Image 1 (cartoon, rainbow, N blue to C red):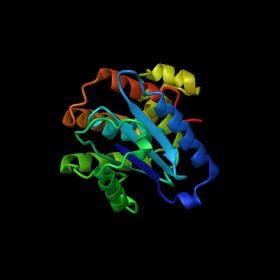
Image 2 (image 1 turned 135 degrees about the horizontal axis):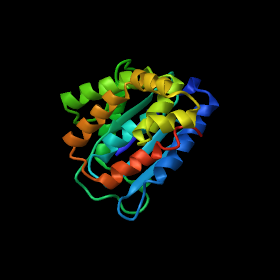
Image 3 (image 1 turned 120 degrees about the vertical axis):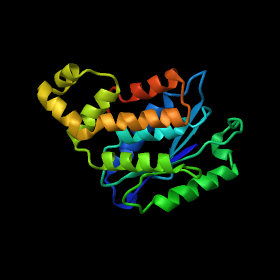
Length: 215
């Protein structure tokens, strides 16, 4: 499961809420016959997500952050996996004790200036890696985020330059400044640590970045 909450949401502009709706629709497309993914934007500033793939929501939280456009209103993420069947019926009626644990972890980092990610059972290695990811996301300019999204979707620098109407040297500079290669290392570390071996699911996540985070 994954719960994502917008910090300082009472001061957020209307575009933030439009973007939450946009992300909800993007993530709903991940639900297939092979893999169940439930996504619901609720309570004004929260995304609630369930997946039947163990530890998949840890990776999912990173890709949602890649799409998130508002560093002034960080999207806080708390994820957790439990060894139980995916809930039958309406997931909104599911009241497993682990949901409370996830919310408590989220509450603990809501005012943190250095960490946007939490988990009830997060190892120190994962915590440090995601602290670094937090620093990367919070320092992105709009063009750096845009080039990062294309790069993570597998688009070449030449094609990124064409799509964004910029020169290749400019794109190369923004990719370096975005620290996207370091972020790729973090993603690979999560995949390795959590044994996320499903290429299909990883490809799905890459695909949601293809059109970028613009609604």
